[in-house]
Amino acid sequence: MISALNSALDDIFGAMRLRRVWIALAHEDIGDQHRRTTLGPLWLLVNYLAFAGTFVFVFQPAGKDAAGYAAYVAIGLMVWFYLMEVISLSVPLFKREESFIEGTTLPLFVYVMRLTVQSAIRAGYAVAGCVMILLISGPPLTPAWLWSLAGLLLILLTTPALITVFAFIGAFFPDSEFIVGNLMRVGMFFTPVFWVYNGQGTIQTFAYLWNPFTYFLDIARIPILMGKFPSNAFAFTGVAAILMWAMALLLLGRYRRQVVFLI
Amino acid sequence: MVSIKLDKVSLVYKLHEKLTLSAPDRRLGATGGRIEGSGRKQFVQALDDVSFELTAGDRLGLVGPNGAGKTTLLKVLYGIYEPSGGTVGIEGKVDALFNINIGFRREATGRRNIVLRGLINGWSEAEIEEKMEDIIAFSELGDFIDLPFKSYSQGMAARLAFSVATALDPEILLMDEWIGAGDASFQEKAKRRMDELAEKAGIIVLASHSESLIQSVCTKRLTLKGGRVESLTTAPTKRARTATKF
Ligand SMILES: Nc1ncnc2c1ncn2[C@@H]1O[C@H](COP(=O)(O)OP(=O)(O)OP(=O)(O)O)[C@@H](O)[C@H]1O
Ligand SMILES: [Mg+2]
Image 1 (cartoon, rainbow over the protein chains, first blue to last red):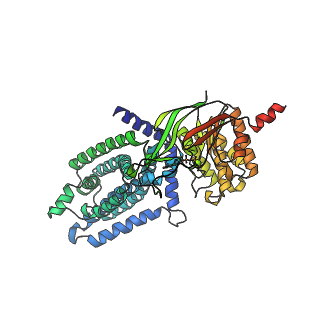
Image 2: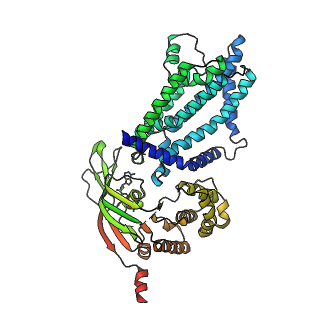
Image 3: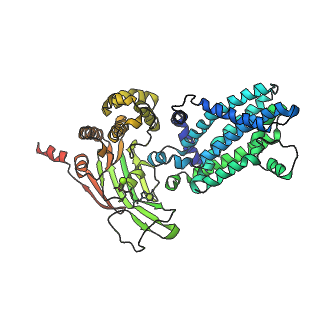
């Protein structure tokens, strides 16, 4: 146990010393994805706005809830897309980095941080779009917004752990790529991303209360929409973050030297 | 003190998928490691009981048929693979040239790729800055250095890879079959740089099928077969032989 922890921390500190590597690689990744396009990474903003706009337009309830719904969907989609992208890109992470893993001795956490930075940069464009929608649709700007910011930070801090855990799952069980892919696609409908929970139906209740993603969405959404601190959601997300990190350290410590033989 | 010490090192690749083998009773050919086990528990014994020691100034040539375990041994020395058994002791800063494309980004220019490579090798920004012009000059890529890497030929890529890998005077340099891609004049130049490196009390381990290359570069020769050491000889090189004439 102790030796696993030491080994994991070795890997993580090694990666931290090489931070310029993953920062540089992440920027290259973003640059490559948008090379030769006119808008460049601004496409990420356009994508987000098109998606959020469609949802608002199609699902917006009539009457005075309308403004609140736009903000609800804007934040919900932002967080959901971020988590979905992070998870679906983590599962095949080690396979994707195969040539590096088989040709260099970089710590595995370098690849984890590379994806973290890349996802964070991409999410930045969605955040910009989200702020635009919030300013237009107009929930009042209150100090409670800071709790939403804290919520986003908590999600960001959980990201490397999430990536590590799913990357190891992907390395050990090749089938998981497809299972996770399907779950994430279906998951959108079982998570209150664009539908609002107000006590209706058993499936909705179940999907609201027992879906961990609900709480990740709530910590970013409730402070802005309701002007209050969602203590339950924060507590749940905090515990989930700690568990994820514990699992990530364990996997990294135990199995990091095996990954090269698995991919 | 730069040194390499291997003691009874073995390495097993576990196969998670079934190997497609036509005959169940296979003979032990000259090619490849040994395939053992059956069904879902098959594995390849790529290295078996490999022991040797190298000290400063040694230039080891790894030879043997395809699949003998040369690349695997280099990767064990570099630290990519943890051996399944035995111990590896390495003193010194190691650099390696396996696949010339590793760490190079196709879309980025040669110059940017030098920076990325340097960062991956753990160099500081100042070191990269300082070596940049040397590396470009040694590679002789000229104006191509500011073109994307994808516009390079195999040999040009090999030039860049070799120039970067040897720029910071690694104490131990591991090389796998890379040199074939460079043209004659670059091979000559590369050999000189390897000589310099070895004279600075470094260690070179070079795996190759080219007899002339091994003879002109190496002072020792390790023959692998089916993952086992068949022989380890200290061969007088051409240079040593000509040197004794004087
Ligand atoms: N990733 C892998 N998974 C399973 N077996 C492997 C793997 N890599 C190599 N092997 C096996 O290990 C043995 C040694 O391979 P290695 O690549 O070290 O040979 P080599 O001496 O470098 O050959 P070559 O001269 O063709 O480059 C071979 O039998 C090969 O089939
Ligand atoms: Mg080989």
